Image 1 (tube, helix red, strand yellow):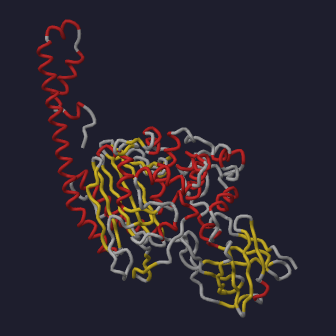
Image 2 (cartoon, rainbow, N blue to C red; image 1 turned 120 degrees about the vertical axis):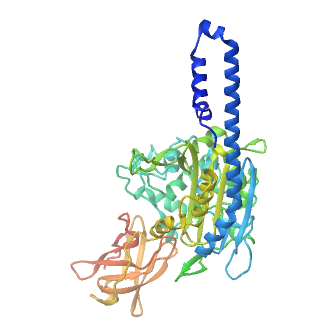
Image 3 (cartoon, rainbow, N blue to C red; image 1 turned 120 degrees about the horizontal axis):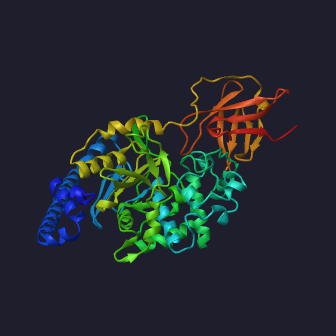
Length: 541
């Protein structure tokens, strides 16, 4: 650990003595010059010795942590069964660990290595803020550029409020948009432009700059605004501004590039307690927020850039001041339970920003696709240290468990708690859907099925059609008109099985019946979390 100041580095009597000498003045100082010099020399020697001792202890703890890291990983993989994992550790501008474990694809026998490409999910966010920082450093945008200056079609909270929403607001999740705004539209297959345009339909209440709410598409809007200011697509901007110059040769913000990699980690989910290949996750719609794919080797270069103030190998790729702003707290993400004892948790621009004794900044971010990816990164800039863990299994805390235990060893010389036990309920809760799961048994409908058939619509979801096909109803949603059979639960309630990243089980579909005994509206529970799941009948007899 680095001492935080001269007094802390010295035994207290010498610190006190040095203070008294420095405070003395006039003839007293002149009279005792030789004594002063001896005291100063002794103090300097003691300070140097204390600093050297602290450095030695820090180096010993790091060596021990690196030695124990493989065991931490193997234990986490054995407990969880996650198919594949890659880890990278950087320290003092060098890659000190680059290792793969397990398999890229269950049943293939193909091993993970340091060049295996993983989907990063939300670990994409600090990478995206690095790209935008490069534009800020060159004066193309500022952190306080209003988003509507570049994306007039993205109106958040009405035109008056929307004109004030900046890149900083969106990157810090403080725009007022509701939590995970727009993710439901992505699950239905809507493209980026459509989702961003429909954010204007969501209520921001009084949350602007007053409340933290994590929003992939708010973050994506910031990336799109920056890209438009630069006259490039987001995907090209990222490659030209960061991936290419930094030498991240296997990194991309295009899903097609990930699919084209022969050495890639496929996504896996647990079903009935067993790991299986999932259907994959196509995140192009939210590329700035969750669409990056990269290898651990590439992430090592990016972490070195973060820890070196935007430079690498003598080249300043991102202005230090612009990059440093991404590391500063911008919004309280979790208020302290006890303000007298616990610090608030804060979010920067694409980073969680925390503080550990003695006043060390720790930067971190996790990524999670329920469809089969879990990632995490943590940096301690004061120690020039960073670690990233990538897995190809759905989130259950494995990257976070490994990183927390490793950093305990680095900072304390011991693992202070059972992180697997601590994180298990957190991730179990996180994986629960945010809508009520249907558990009711099937039952006969109250009306003939044709009375429910029709086209229903609202401005947010667009058209939803319900058709009678044979002796059952089929609902079709989204731009691709994906079909979803409806199962009657009795009365005017049905259920269907959502698909996509936010699906968690059967959702209710409830029809509202008009005076003529015909349905006039439908409420789809899993799409109604923010009150946008009620659709009115559009076809009239």
